Length: 52
Image (cartoon, rainbow, N blue to C red; front, side):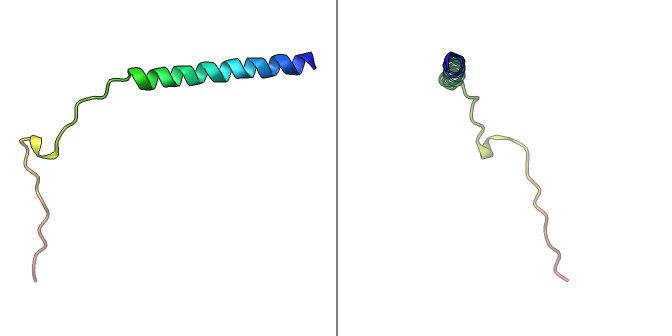
């Protein structure tokens, strides 16, 4: 029974550490700047259907 308690305690520590690392990564992440659709100077060529 002591072995199972140690396994359960170590599993709790590992899960807590993973959750803390993921939460820390989410809170300290800096998002990249947003690129607006009309901000670029390139032109977009749209295909035109030919009437026959």
